[in-house]
Length: 291
Image 1: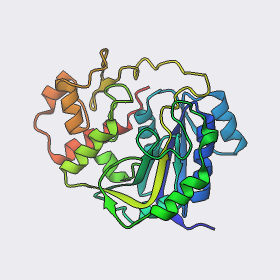
Image 2: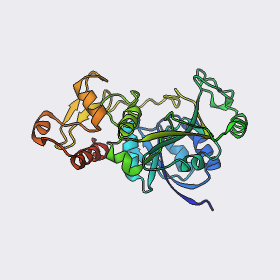
Image 3: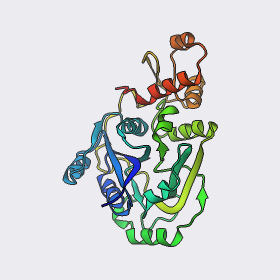
């Protein structure tokens, strides 16, 4: 029996069931601890649901079509002290969770070294073909065994592990524009400005296939709120659509820096905010459902 860890992993999946299957196999084979696995199916294909049902795995259904909003949803379900986030198009190396566990602390953003198919070793997998059967699992496992080291880097990537309290204290992930615009970087920067550190372990590795998209040939419809993103007021709940999918401007800069957003009326009425008030607004930003 594996030892229970302090880590909840939120795995967001959509419509690439073959990649999800391999991801789950790596999770089962290469996890040292008994971690909490929270699977969020965000507008999934029927193949994805069939796979999870055949594996007898519990999952949550969401309709965001926005990776980072689905992550916020999953974080609310996490019951352990730390929470991490994964795409379904990754393969976890041996002892990935033990490597992260050694780094976890309230002020630390922890991850393992990422090997990306677009700019690194590919172990037989060619991103353009998207043929997962070409991926040589043994070659990757051997690479992990032969190249692991005690070196600590500071590049933040999957599985994006935060102290859960820290995650919500800094507003969780933003969603002011499309999901591909690096919302994890904004959260990383907010935490780092407050003294947080990024620690990347080289004791294990993660392989990112990338660009798997609608591999099941069932692209889901866009969500009217999240297609271009939106601004949601953390006090009154008013919504302003980001119709141009902007990633610049006064509102964007405000939410990137502060981890929450206020409509004009609430901003005027809020006055000068102390640290406790800001923390409450950030929690609201990360926990409102915004359906």
